Length: 98
Picture 1: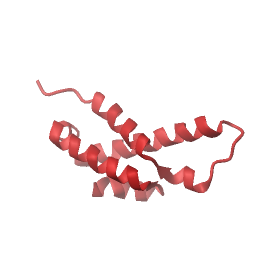
Picture 2: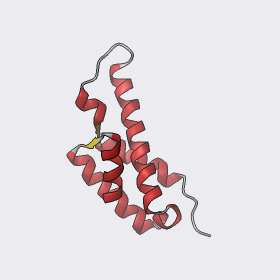
Picture 3: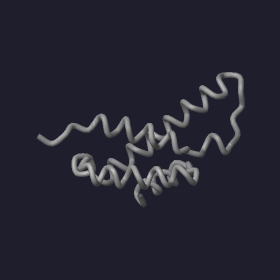
Picture 4: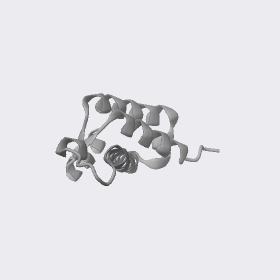
């Protein structure tokens, strides 16, 4: 969780309150499911944050299109859905141990 927060801070991004809860749950699920062992703490955190920010950017574009102007808050705030989408995408890409 601290690693992910560090990556967010370095990008100038922030988590919505409910997204912080989702991020913690994603980290706990990665540990419980063993995907953290295959990805590593730092790489998992970096990829989760990167994918969540990308999901946010896509959500903002879909909301405002090319004609709307998002607020500064919208541009930097990662929401709960963004984190959940990122975790699902990341978790699906991890091959199980055989």
